[in-house]
Image 1 (cartoon, rainbow, N blue to C red):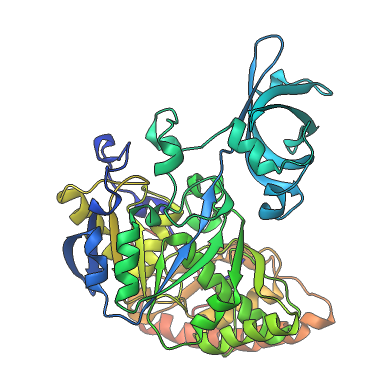
Image 2 (image 1 turned 30 degrees about the horizontal axis):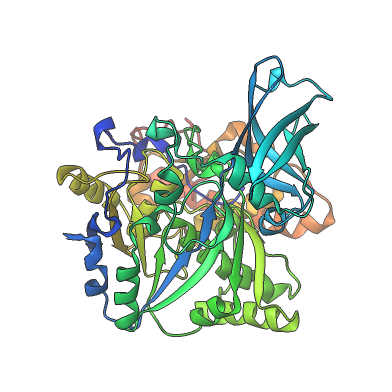
Length: 505
């Protein structure tokens, strides 16, 4: 586990009345409100005024994924209705290959009414495609993993044609309504191209061709990348400590042009949290390539929070990626990201973010808080609630400039000592380290004596870390005794400190 302080998810809660959730989009996409936040200052515009707010010369990154009709329903002979909700492809594994698969494909699904689907039972459904009847069959390939194998009678047809004919577009569950025919158009950006998402990159829903043309005329560069949004985007954070939340994995694709744009000295604006997560992931892939030229583009959720030395700037990291693509004759790079952006994250790529207003206690709100810094998100959301903004996927928009954030420090003596102990120890819990009574005055921590006994000797490769921790510990014990003698600690607010800390930092 990396060094991330506890993040109480309830600190990111706010009251969102149901009537403020936009159940339907506006008739004109760019007529939505736009809240602009920069260095603590808030102004209110219409989204169609976005080009006026930019100087020209910026680069906008759009996510061009396209929402697929991912809900497939089958009626059993006995009358039971079974739903298979496409989550991620198994065979072929890449989303875009699975979309073009002919004859058969296997997907990991969320199966509704699974208990009614008996092992070995084949579900059938007849579709009409281009005036011809096509028989679609569904086999339960793996009950535990809920993997479903689909086969169809016209093997020359790609799977995307099958789901377009027989699937239903999934809309966010918080809309509390059934999907309507209009959602096929409105729950899609005007620049969507690559099928594979089960949720829309909603920040882009406000763009119209006229807004895009105005941006182009002003000299704003526009780049398209791809992150196929998964259903995990709606997964609530249920852990009290948001650090314990398991982030979903999503497939991404970036072009050579995308990476080249990162080497130029331009202000970078991410259209949506998915674009931002892709760009930040790309930076961390460059960091990987610095030490391993053949590294995989597979960014874990805690990767940015691990201890790194002498991290490169954006241009250098992007150059590592360009060199990798050149060596491997790639014009497009495919990978996976699970990156988890929480308060304390240090942004490496993006200068501004265009995004909607998100659910309370969500990973998206954590990202907004991380980007704006401190409690600025509360000012932003209070202003939106107080000025009649519509919330969530079909709601209004905001343009947020990067605020002042306080990144986690891995170089301080406290973190350095904790890291050494973690290397030497086994299974030390995060609550091993608690503030001592006068931590605000002295900046000290105490180690809970109940967990210190978990430190055990490791193989020879750990001896250096153990020795370092021991020597540092001896010095700090002496310093701690001196501090304890000079100032008796008082009760710590909100934290139960050990009565007799054995080490003070």
